[in-house]
Image (cartoon, rainbow, N blue to C red; front, side, top):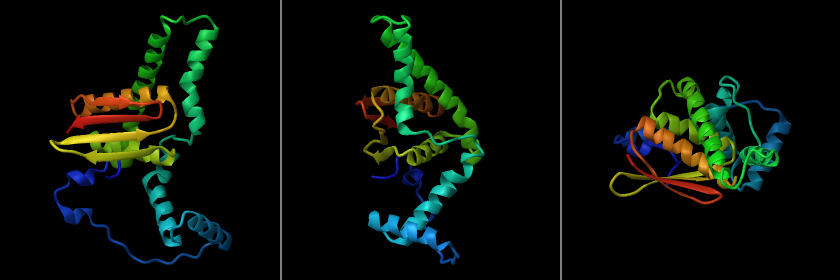
Length: 207
């Protein structure tokens, strides 16, 4: 198993995937060190590993967050947006049992289309390139900082399996399905097969 959209798996030059390290020294506030040591102990990892994880998170996402106009959003808020829109429309008599699913599908499709459109500037700013793998890489990094679990497996016959475990409910599964559909069809001209549960979206695609 690997990161959800890890492109190293399609790199034939193994030397490029090797990571180099070097030692540096920093003078830090004692309180900061104490708090990070507590966090490292709770997670049963070394302080060095925690510091490296923190700096990696900053270089991959944190330094871009304000520049691309992104802000942290609580997972509970994400999960409730579509639900609340449907609830309000139903209370106001705008929806019936026969139009509810159609209205929900329209909201989800519009939300995914908007998200996909807005991603382009962020991807170009962060990766200096715009293709399937850079888009998926930025999506992965956003999910990481949002506390959403993901996984990427490569099967036989160039089959890629992408799993997003969000725990945000059925509507969010439908949203991620629609977003990935637009990404794969637009940037790779392929159609994915999906399986969804209220908390997980799984996509299988030949790349």
